[in-house]
Length: 265
Image (tube, rainbow, N blue to C red; front, side, top):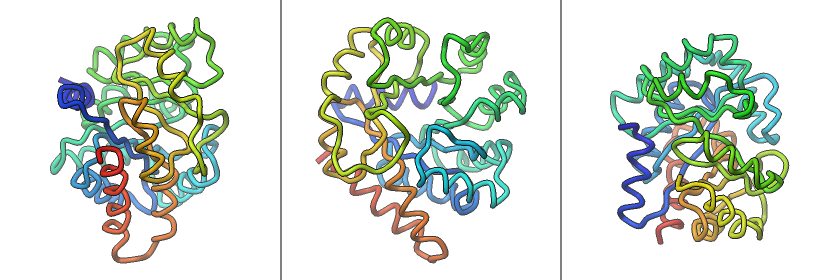
């Protein structure tokens, strides 16, 4: 069974909420990405989103844009990210989702990328700029490879489109709790409860909520409505501020552990 599906199944059986952490692959380098993923697994993370660096990351705020830039500067390529996931699989079964822009898949070759991702040990793809209406054979290829096709739903998504996205998605639904781009926020959106209830009318898939969640208190508040909480920019910012420090991995993992404890405490 797909590791992501298996993990959410276990969380549901145990009555627990999940934590998904996003980091930019190759920031500051791919070996550190691998070591961070291993440390996050040990800290209680339920899945890891690896952002594949791209030169024009339109869905991302400044913190994650800079992480993508650092990833590109370190020489990170889609093939290098897949090789890193393969190396990670030697010591961890933590589910891995690639957060990626479609141009990178198109250039690599869609069918080949999906096949190589599955062989490397990836569990799902979140393609930021590939709406299901324009996905063509993507869904079939993903199912054939055993990968989850994860889609975004936003506060402004019309009801009819929520139903259509839910029909095509697998693994989980990613609910973007705020309009705009990724980034840390002082407060969480007040509409999360209403929107997650609305999405649940159309699917039994787990709902993960992200964009703007920055600390354990916010993560705990969001977890009341979501099946999983996604934290990205707050973690990426700590990686940037810890660049060059010998304890970078340990210090960031310590913060991630507080997020996991906040959700489950």
